[in-house]
Length: 264
Image 1 (cartoon, one colour):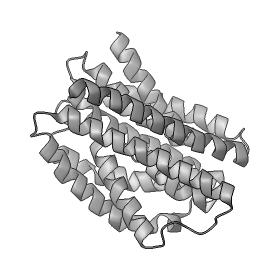
Image 2 (cartoon, rainbow, N blue to C red; image 1 turned 45 degrees about the vertical axis):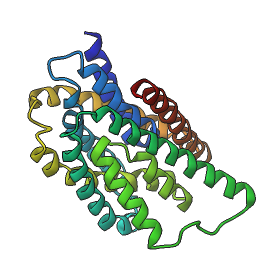
Image 3 (cartoon, rainbow, N blue to C red; image 1 turned 90 degrees about the vertical axis):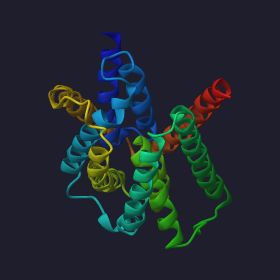
């Protein structure tokens, strides 16, 4: 019973994060679900497959809410590199599933995402403090690097939120445009993973009736998030997002280092 309560809370967080309130908090959804599923007949391996349709549903809710304000041009340069990253991530996913020590590989991946999140936010804060306005990396290199890392991270662990946030935040978009643009990007990225997950057998254990039963929790989370976002000023909203990405980055680093100590 406790396991399903945790899973329900994780699914609620999907809606909350997709509404624009999550920052990097969406990163805890996959590990939370995987840990809880380990205590059910489905097993922790079912987490990625169970969550993907719910993530896409959250993307659609966010797109519907912000359909008139998103700016597709801001993420268009990322599309081809992200597609390449999804392909690379798919190859890594198939390779990982054949390895005995999958936990070590997963832990290293989470450590990398945590370090990257801390670095990108710290770099932004430092540059703001120093009054440095020019970008550290020029285009198209910035889009290629960001898109590739995003594609790999989202395929392996649904964990690319902080990367895209760090890419879009310096553009100083209106918060509604920021959320809508992020939703459009992740809808495209998440739907592109469907064939890979199907071929990898990640949907084999999933009963689609379970997905439908969990869907209202995504809707509830999104409704709560939309309500809260409207009541935040732009300044407080973006401070919250930066702080959330930074905090989750440290959470991932500390958690991953603890796991590595136990694995070595």
